[in-house]
Image (tube, rainbow, N blue to C red; front, side):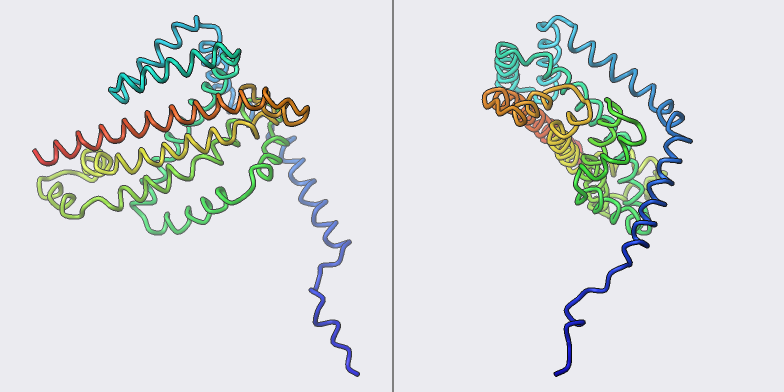
Length: 299
């Protein structure tokens, strides 16, 4: 009888060859990190200094001053007294349960990561909207960033920069930036062509069309992207705590390893509260902006 067992086995690379390839790649990355690691760390020093300063500002300022500032920003964005009062109650409860400092640390890193994601993501989204070639190049990269497990890209970041805030920021931004890029691209592409033609007919330059027509009309879509970016950044809090980022993630991690149920529950509650506040405030701001734009457009 003929032997067809070879049909069931998948051809594999020789184990010694695979080992050699892995050794070569590991060695090359180690050499790269030794050669350029210090230069890359120096490049991120201004960001680290700003992050440390902002964290100290939130942690060491009087709690009532921070609470007034946060409530004021919430009211300016939402123009809702109910939402502002809810924020006050939520933060008072967080402080009463002894999580104020960790919440401020988490708030500082999420704010910095979100600002970085916006500063980097919106221009990339604009570039994608203006060029189909750029979109075809960037889209697969975004797919990889969104599907690759966070632990995988933590490895090269930690090997290069060690444990600390900056690797945490890089990991959070990589994980959280795709929505703002995708929705900036989508929002600009969905702007009515007739509106653009009218702007061109009035003599608007490409930059004037972008700043005066496309970005304002795409604003609600871009805000939806920013909203999703904030949610994804908050989802990375616990994972970032594994590489030395202080905040609400570390007590959650501690509760997992030591089976402290209430510690994890309370800190998880604080993360959820931050997520709800960011979500509701950004949505309220987007709706207000959309009403304003539609009012101006109709006028």
